View 1 (cartoon, rainbow, N blue to C red):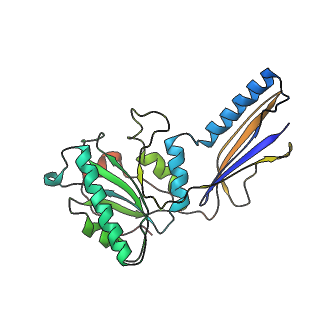
View 2: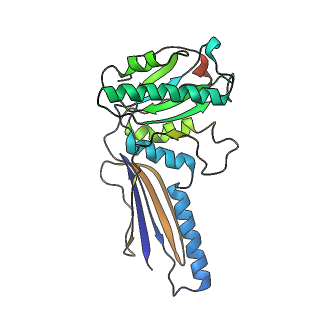
View 3: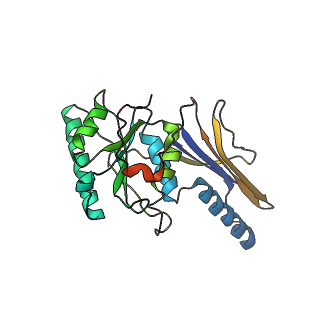
Length: 257
């Protein structure tokens, strides 16, 4: 039986799957069963969900020097609607990008705008690339509408937790796979390889890697195995603030070490 292997690498985060592929000589029933296995393998890779795509995009483009931050509003600056909130965060990112260009650096970012949970105040969650020692102060100086709730250093392996955190509200009422965030154009896609392997090929995480997810299914016509792992070294995990704390306007300008 022919097996196909697909590996997606994004920074320290790796997803791999091996599944039995349908063959032209297969019976109609065998092809149907193998096709279901192929579909199950794709679902296991999480490639068709917005959260799955986002976590790999984050892992591929942001590391421990970069920032996860939240922009909030003072009462008198609270935007009247979602459209105005998005205009303001885009203006902030434009100013940050111009400043980076003056320094000879580029800006990479991903952001979402929320305002349906808690006390319904609009706010923005952003992941932005780092540039130098003055990054935190620059972020505060460019956001004129209120306080920055938090600015934290992130790590490659936190992509999973961050993606889950910032897509929770956006997922409500949207179809599976719908775009839930806005990104800069200069982000690199994850590295994807797909090729045939021998029948006895098995999925194994390399030494020192942390296995995050594992799934296997088999039947008389073949099967699939899925593995998700994080390459070493270990780093401090991401701990999101309570979801209703985004309106507290509490400053914490010191980056997390």
